[in-house]
Length: 148
Image (cartoon, rainbow, N blue to C red; front, top):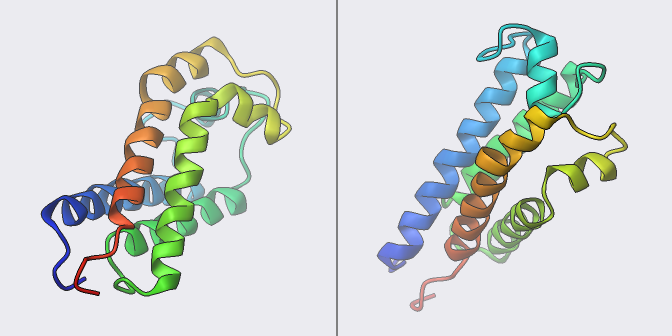
């Protein structure tokens, strides 16, 4: 990471904070909390678009671990090794794809029911923009410093 530009370092910080925060939140949900929703059904409606489909705790825990690990690597762990750069690029590409495709497409790909209006509003207002910002940050953070 020696000699990395300010933009690259700032992008890595944004990606790290965002992805680790997403990981922590999923960890809280995997532990059984519905926060900030009032109930698990309300949380399911807001996050997967259906009160009839509640994500399994193990699947939510896997997302928590993956998001946290991606955040740590996006933040600069492993330096500018080829595997770290590849991981940052893959993370950024996946997030940009999710942001561009949207939650309705994501639900279909995952075999979930058509999402509720509430999920669609949250997706348009929060989830898609967050994915796009974190995706760009991860890709910009994947740039190697010129001195390497």
